[in-house]
Image 1: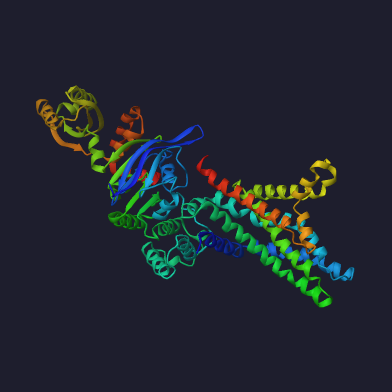
Image 2: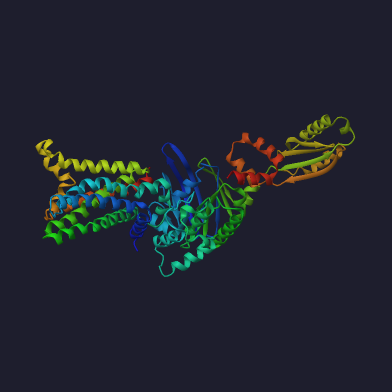
Length: 236
Length: 349
């Protein structure tokens, strides 16, 4: 087995051996469930859109909570030394941790499929937006996780990792809201950087390569920074 | 030169403006147990961190099993087992889970690893805590788990940073014999500041102080570097001493001090007219005939005349402290006795 997979296996076990996984999944389900069912009962609408709509904001709080410990805790407690002196490449450590957090996120998302089935039993489910929405959630979640992992690689303090991850995600989120306030020449750039704009596109059921590439680039860049920051112990 | 397992040349590490390791050069051959000795903060751990590829050297090179620690670090890490200081092991895993994790990380054959885990767990005395969480283990068990994970994949080279810290005396004896056994075919580097440990386990000693290598050799060779001998003399001065014991004692001390070859002479005790003196030789010559002759000439009764053997502690102190600290170190050694000092040093560490 590749060391990256061994690490992600260990991390997944660590998540589910501690309250972290259960708290995150429960909070996630309570909030999304509340939003979905109020919509269902009050507005008599069986619709997944409000559920998807709140995700960019919800991820901003929940995902840093998942990712903050990944590298900061290893640095703080010194376990990184033993891990990294095993025959493993630095990027394998980062990718392993990324996959573990992504697995936890997918577990939480899988539980929300219950909403999709509810909609389906009550009326016709618009397949395209539903599938696109879930694909978008995984991609966007991956980007948030990569940002969180990068923040976690920069510090040995988990609280700092949380706040930095939140700040970066929030900045990217704000870009989408501030488009009309920036000079016209910058508008396309700013709106391209918006983390939730691309999700909206995919959520309409239109999977455009530009949106996929945006998320994959955020993931790629952040994991690269995390790897470099892990390597930086060598030239500090 | 194929049996040289570790080759270190001018290895240097700076932390910002501070130089932690300063141009250290040494080789370690297969079948050697190398003791890495030095006061706290001398650069022992930093050197080990560079050999295990955790830190990169600022200057100089280190080759482990023929591979450079910087350019071929993966190959180096495949061939070493490492026990870092303070045994940082995931607290949320059980002992067995951690060993399985280590086996998987090392890419061990999944068919064979359970048997190997069982074997090494047994040798390190972990069988009774296999299902316990690492976070709940006592320091001694955690240390043993650290050793077990370092030896799990049967590495050619073992690098152990203070392997016996936190162990009780019985465990220390067990672990030392384990290290010695491994050291017969493999290469072991261990750091410690417990001097009897070095004498018990190591075939070679490196002493490092202030980041610099100050000594390199077998324990015997290092002891023989300390040439100037030390003597203990117990004398009975006869009738004159009963009338004025203090004066007689001082007179004898003065006479002894004037002898050729005597560097310093201190009074240790003087009871019932039997005086004990400690004498430091100024040269490497044997002073015993001279002291005997002095006793005969002065009509003292010689009760005891002993040449004390130089201990590793003296060598260590000598090399790692300034010359000014020496006389003081020696006199309290006489009061306490070498054995007590060994225990004191063990307690300290």
